[in-house]
Length: 403
Image (cartoon, rainbow, N blue to C red; front, side):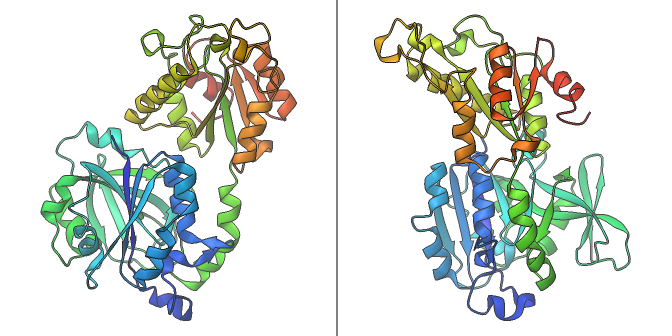
């Protein structure tokens, strides 16, 4: 299961001049916070649990940043640092992490961000044992600053140097998926871009995923200036709030156990489509089964953890979950009360919006009952009543995602 990520933080950032003379490029402020915050936040909401910063230039600052990091605290992941004893290139920086690497992991460039589903490559590589790596690509107009990539039948077949005057090309978006096998191809000093990836491509061992989300790197003054405006705007996302029973799973009556859970047709694919369309995906569910004594709250946590694992196997995830265990007529005294979290009230939605930067004007709720629709309307969301069938087809028909 893909839960580990590493971030390359060792670049000198010479093209940024005095900005990086005393500050590592990933720690430059963008919108009043370090650029690394953007990458850590994205890893956190995708439920990565182990994040490693690969440091070199101004390494003590990276170490200080990782210590008691609030984003790691919010999402509950471990954040550690490995320091290169001497500059070793991007491949050498990764080589230093060989003793702690998981069986599969992500590697991110510490000076670029693409808005994408970070789990996209995992199921692709899982079904192709001959693949050692996968690289996220972005189609870019006027790609003069970047090397370009050629793809055939889902495999990267070549890399090229910068091509001045090209109108459009595929470029690396700086997000790598690696099997642990990659370390047999690395050396203490080497370049991923110049040495390792081209050699692997010649054996068709590198898959490609192509993405259309916002992309930026902060490696030159003009793009660093653009990042000040664009990144804060892009981090404010629309969301889709999903009811559970009757939307993600068949409503078989107080579903509180894994063995009673049955996915709705197209549910997993719908969640992944929402992830890839750039939405935050939230679960908001009334769980009166707790108040009525059918199962304890611990059963809800167990079931939701299992749902996240099943989604993750298919390259999908739910960003956050709220549930309401209360009911005014419950048999369990501790849960027998009214709650503004219970739909048709919108307390669960409001609480999520207090925790996340949600663009409500572009957000939706999908439910199967009138109480879901009332909650959506009270919160100012676009409501959609799902009456059964295939959930992926439904969200496409309702234009929540494209076909």
